[in-house]
Image (cartoon, rainbow, N blue to C red; front, side, top):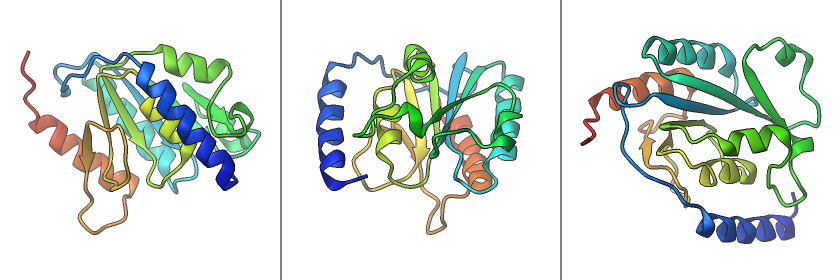
Length: 180
């Protein structure tokens, strides 16, 4: 992505974000009834961990939707067998990084209690997906860059790895005591 398209993309994102009406509230596994998991398919060994985390949320009686971002125009063959996961591909992203199309519209129409973001690097399309989500409580890996996350897990000197991130996420979300 060129510097010009990034600059335009960030400017358009800020404009759209100002218009976003979002009801923020702290959630934990007892108070949440719905969740969205957003993940980067390029993260090594992410699928088994995401699958287990989805099972965990189901056990907690939280309805969960899963969306993966594929940085290719087509979904790789091995991912086509991944059940119950919607994919946004590079084909669904315009020239300045904004997601569009049927799956992106479905993603933006959901207003979950919790949004779990499994993207451990800066990526403009993930910024769009995270910032324009109307989730009540957004959770992701710590970053010093400007973001819209309500709760960040800091891996304390370690690279964010999916398994470690999920382990920490479960621990700290259980400790939260939101006021009702």
